Length: 200
Image 1 (tube, helix red, strand yellow):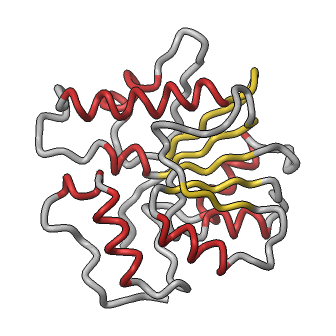
Image 2 (cartoon, helix red, strand yellow):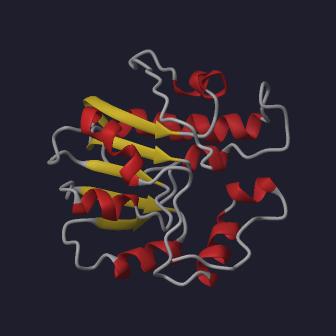
């Protein structure tokens, strides 16, 4: 379902704020889905390769009102935990997905995850880090505040991933702008291109 609501902020830095998302989700009907740049159908070939076992524990960071988790659930991934710092969207999604038993929705900030160490096999970020990096500064030399926010997210992902787990980060950003934030001594970073983001 599409909407004519104004969803673009006046300033791109608003994408980093909880206030923007609360305001946006409070105005959007709960049944509306919005997927940033890729749908599950487009991501499925990637997931088939990197998440072949559908019984693994999955955490979706900054789930928003995306249909990603619903589509994954319907495709057999039933152990999915979804988090977002917007209380409104979590309540909406919890109600919208009440028939999908076993899938959970929790209000939580990705920079301070309330999970034990080594909890999840897979962590997925589809556009959340991109939103946190929205800044009017130089992409080659971002604002220190932006760098710190991203560091906290990746540090938390490192902590909660099981040994041998995977962090799947789907981004609109170019690898040379993003890779440096993902590199950790214990990680192997691989880049895959998912085709053109421009559809004509």
